[in-house]
Length: 187
Image (cartoon, rainbow, N blue to C red; front, side):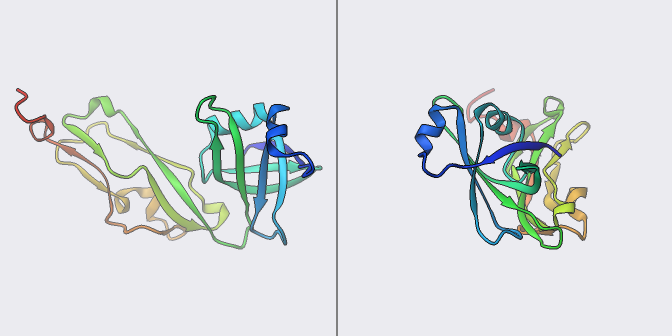
């Protein structure tokens, strides 16, 4: 798990001034914290976090030598520059379930014999921090036309430690015959 150094945010300086100085304002809330608090991190660290981690990813923040276990709850980036503008973290407690999402990635999509249709990209769930899932990769190698995959077909979601917040029979993907997926009149 990644450890990212952060500092307590100087609330006298507004967010725009922080960003111009290469600092990204953030906040931490929930878990065992009595109150939410503001933090800040270097722009470079925040941008790397934006590229490599997703909402729902677990990380550790180091604040004044103390480690805080968190998950990324929300990331905001500038649409033009792509730079991180703000990140919200939820503090995690070992003994408390937390709501999160698992991101679904597909592998070997070029080997699919028909038209691939992915209907779900994220699966919401609840679990204790130790059982959290960040991503699920589905290998499509050898999957024939007519394949339908539901959430309950994915081994990671068959665990008793994961409480799905979506119907288990929700369709993740299907592989249709090429003829049905073709545009009308196209031969």
